[in-house]
Image (tube, rainbow, N blue to C red; front, side):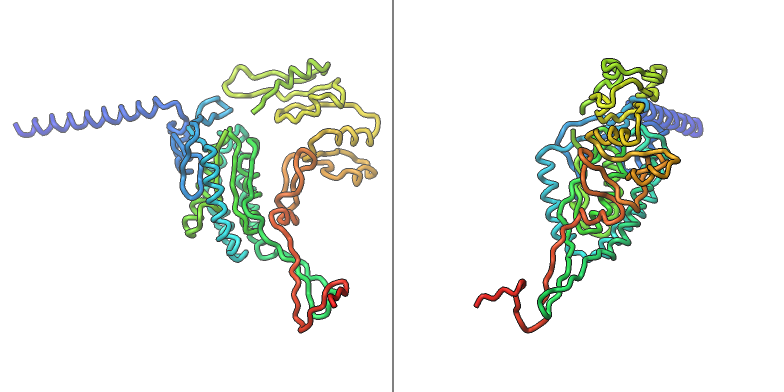
Length: 409
């Protein structure tokens, strides 16, 4: 009689476990967020993300603003929730950043470079996971998402070498027994505001050099890609904690755009759409056809409007000089290309020749002009915009001569 009782109890226990597992599975499947989907959960949780995430960091994670859903534009499905920061949260992280700067600016540059090296190594470990998140949240193809992370740790490598190479000049003095030296000093808090189209790389090439130069960073990412901002900051956080460094070195605040109908404006301005111009309605997400437009005037307002969309405006010009003039009359100035076999035109053009405008290598200075911005980021001597220069005069003689031969007697 004992055996059947034990058997019945065992069956009940198994049924209970099965029921419990089924209820848990049903609970997980009932969540509307992709982070609960087994297809995506592994790499998202590896990045430290949860169903609801705090969007402010200064050494601690917190947030007191509104809660938003981060949406995958490829499917229009929510990935996870983010609680954004408030104005009070912003003021707090500014104070934390200021305190962190007082410490960090006095750390020797090569030691700062070693921390940047560790950030690069941590990014390498998370290359695929972070690349997948960028692809999911921003909507670009996976190789480009992974490429953004690659660019971040490439610039970390560059910044490590840079941390031993800040080259100020030694200048001759008109005063006997004197020497003039340029001294480079960090600026303080570097604010980094990034757009949705490069939610990781733009932050990376600014932060790596800023930290190596002795600055701290305060990051405001695009409101449509908050999870990428949070996941990237969590990767940096691991390095800071491992080295007992203040979180204010790499502060983050997520917070809350203006979309116009470019195709409609094209038709209103007399333009002709010779290809595309349609939305792919047969699939989920936000997919549109590449669009080619002709018969617009070169100075039409829609042509001069910066639009992040696959729209190509085509014009016929009479001369090379006219083409350059039309190209330069817009308010923006990030990049341009010319395709030519004529050597006469090669060196009249200052950006790209026989190569498209996409892609930039970290070794060269990168940045725009006019409304696109001023100054340079990334390679060459772009590090100078993250520092201020002062002249140090040293008197190693026993006299006190003044410049320009001035005497107060």
